Length: 361
Image (tube, rainbow, N blue to C red; front, side):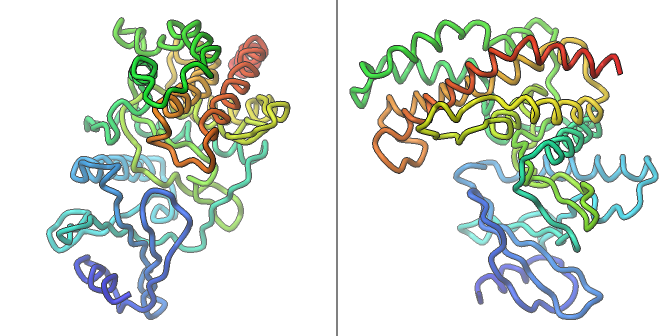
């Protein structure tokens, strides 16, 4: 840990550094808990930023600073207490920036939030909390004065993802096209409808918002009483359609099966999770326009569709992007996401009715 201690020394921390140990199981960044000696100094979280994914670290950290400053301002305006536990606080490095480059890797540090925990549980109760927290998160950022950059360009751009698939089909690099013609046809049948968000945006009818773009139950911190403290993991916070935060949570949270379930009979859309998350989201996201609300069922379908497109393109390309455990893994994922999509589509009218009932109080 000697190198990590040296890394920490480049940040303006308080107290004497004691133990540094790995924290969490994140797939993108390497994360460590930094404990200081004594009870009156904060502990910290040290992260190595994965700049293979987040290639513009300056933009990444500028986005996060703008977002955390805005949330802090809103909490003060609302007369909130315990603000230090309700918004992430990044520590400046000796250069005055919120990151430090050691010549090879980029690092950042934030204050560790005491007496806080995360949950992996996806049930109606926590889905409601997630909906409300992410809706409130977007609401606080609806009037942010800064213009944020895209930390992962075209991350949730459906037109871009379809073009990737069409390029894969044209190249047929792994010779797998013959196996998947049914799925190609089904995807193309829906392509026009599923690119609706980009089309509405170009027509000036649908705004882009500041969104989290990685809405999971475990991206919230809870206090000792089970109340949400704050939303965490802000690397993907960037301009997007609100459908990103709404639809992506439901794609994982409301799936009755696994993302790569081989037993398609287990895969379906859980309306109880949908209702709980949607109720919370509509309570938190008080800024939504009628066209955004009207298209929430579209958003629920968009993300299984998008992930189906991405898994299928990777399968056709010969598994060059996603890690796979066996040769047919991406095809199994494609089939599971398509089954989820079909289940979402079957519940469209029910979703619309529930959303109408929420709005009528």
